[in-house]
Image: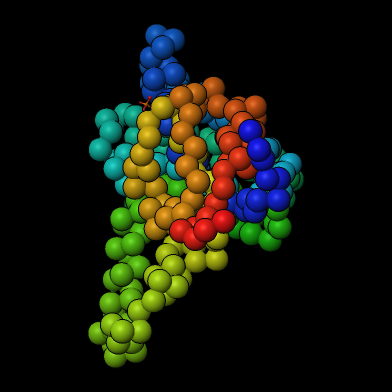
Length: 238
Ligand code: FPP
């Protein structure tokens, strides 16, 4: 496999799928699969830090995930709090800057407050931006951007003809974050499921059958090697 180590890789985005199936395969309740997800998150942060990736976005909870059974939603929210509280000191020491994307106001007060404290504590860190996508939906993000732009039009600050792609990008939740060059989905499913749908227009997609709790440093490095073997033409010619 020919590889281009100079291919820019600032932002990796991951759809962490397959926790439930991982648990079922072992005869365990689904929540055990979410528990087991933590080690894979650690590994992803570690690998990104080692190779100088600047942004890692993890799809932790989608706008659609609210339709799961109440007990599972409540478990994931508790896990989120536990993850933040249990890892904040180490992440801070590693110079990781914690951020989020999504409709954070939808989250229960507990995890939202824990997240806000973690964001504050790590705000001046200069290493990896770890972006947790929570109550995130790509369509919701675009809708929120369009509503903002439409209100500038109705105020008379803009005309429809002034609207550009850059303006849409700059009205997304995190306008400073570059588009992901690489989007990975674990567990064998091959779709984006409403994840970063605007930002991934030209992303390289890597789908792996490995379930998220089994996706460790070795598997992430393999996905990165696959990315490096791709020719990125952005619609042009080589
Ligand atoms: C996908 O597996 C996983 C989720 C929808 C939730 C992901 C949540 C976590 C990894 C934990 C919380 C987040 C952090 C940052 C600690 P699935 O349940 O859809 O698996 P399945 O498709 O096999 O059922």
